[in-house]
Each structure stands twice: as C-alpha cells, then as structure tokens.
Image 1 (spheres, rainbow, N blue to C red):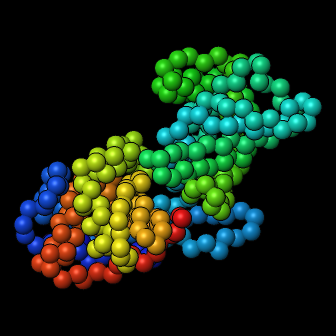
Image 2 (image 1 turned 30 degrees about the horizontal axis):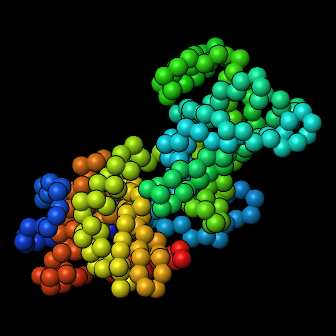
Image 3 (image 1 turned 90 degrees about the vertical axis):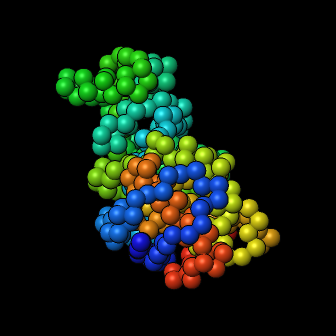
Amino acid sequence: MLLQTQSLATHFALSLTPSKPIINIQFTPPKPKSFQSPFRNVKCALSVISEPSHREFRSDKPFPAEVSRTIMELASVGTLSTLNQEGWPLGIGVRYAVDPEGTPVLCLNTSIRQFSMDRRSSLHVQLEQCGLKTPQCTIQGSLGKPEDKMVLKKLHSLWKNRFGEEIDDDLMYVVHVERVLQIDDLKEAGVWVTSSDYRDAHPDPLRDFAEKLVNEINTNNVEDVIRFCNIYVDFDQVSEAKLIWVDRLGFDMRVFSQKGIFEVRIPFPREVTDVKGVKSTFNCMSQLAWEVEKNFHVPNFQKVKHLKQIL
C-alpha cells in the first residue's frame, strides 16, 4: 500500500505491509484500495492587502482565510468594537451567527446601540483548542441593517437555527466584511486576508468533530501520539506529546521535552474530509510508525523538521 504526500515542509512516502496488530489502536483499519491513489495537492490562494506578506505559507496547512472561516463557524460569541456618539471606543460582548459567505449577523439591544455616525467597527473572535492553543480572527468592516425582506427572512432562519430563538428586525445588524486579521495563537503576528478571499474560502470539513477526535486520541492512544513525534518528527528526547487540533490536512501537536515546549505540524498522506478518513489515516500512520520503531520497516520518508518553540 502506498501513501504519498507532498508539502513545503515534509514528504511522506508511506508503504504499509502486514505486520503485528497495532497496540492500543481502537480505530478500524481501512480497506487497502482506499490508499492506492496519490495525494493531490489542494490549490487555494491568499491575497494580502496593504504591504505584501513575506511569510511562507505551507501547503500542509489550511490557508488563513480558511482558518478564519472555521473560527467564525465554531464560535458564537465575540467582541464588537466601535465608536460611541461621544467618540470613545466601545467594546462589548455579542452573540453572532454567520451566513454562507461568512458575514456576521448580530443581535444588538437598544442599550448598546449608541453608535456614532461612523459605522466602522471590528468583531474579534477566538477559539480555544483543547486548552493548548487560541487561534483568533478580527473582522474589520462597517455595521449595517439589512433592509431587503428576502435577506431578512434568510437571516431570521439562520439565527433561529443557530440559537433556537427568534430575533427582532430592529435588533438585527450585519458586519459588512472589508478585511480580516487572522492570528494563529496569542503573542503571534497576524496575517491580513482580503474580503474576497475570506468570502470564497470554506470552513474546514472536520470542524464539528475535531475536538472530540483529538480528545479521544489523546485519551486512548497516548503511546501512538508519542511515537508519531519520535518517528515522523526530526526531534528526540520527547517526554510527552498531545494533539492540539486536527483538520483536513493534518495534526497540530504540542511536544514536551527537556529542551522546552514545541509545536509541530504532522501532515496527512492525503486530504481527509470526514471522521472515517481521519481514523483510517491515523490507524495507517500508527501502524507504519510502530513497524519503523520495531525495525520491521525501513523508513523511506523525510522527517518533519519545522518545530516552533513555545517555551
């Protein structure tokens, strides 16, 4: 069985052969035929406004626009910042929903609608990932009230599906997105995303069950998680390792050692889009890692070399 993946950071050429059963692996092994087609790189683009970014985006990781859309879909509370009638900046906590293009829909009661004539505003949203990482995005745009009856009807339905309650037309506002600042974690630099890239991006298909999967693997497959770091990452002396998050292109992991605490990205051999695909891929990668560790299989892949030190 042959697995291939290409990324800017690493390349796996995974070859699985029958061997001893996997220890502590509770996932059902995939059928061989599902791993015989080569990995296809996902093509997507990011446009950056103002000054061009010199950051190198890796193809084994979702692009910032996709990450922002995912954060907005998973969270439902953010901080709306605008200017009041006296010209003072005002930040308030708000609930929101998003339409299919990622436009935030807000419910603002009369006590907090003391806006100035300048409707420029920002909506800051963050998502905690298993207590280890906090990606966030800030949407900059202008507050507006939808007037079209058909649009209002769709937004009413959207709000009820999200929160299970009706919303008064007079309390409904939208933030017309002009640009988005996406930040991977606290204390990190952000990347500006244009409104068109944000609107055209899609949330990650694993978003609704990613946290459950990560918690399940961290609880039931501790040895496999550590083995992943020892086999697939160019790093030694790993004392502890935990999954942080999973998306369609791979795992984010937190690695603990005597040298410090690091974050590392381990890509999948190919893109996955559902729970079955994640479990099957994890199972196959765990099998290969076990065989390499036991010297039953000669590693014919390059290890991940990019680690980001946290502490």
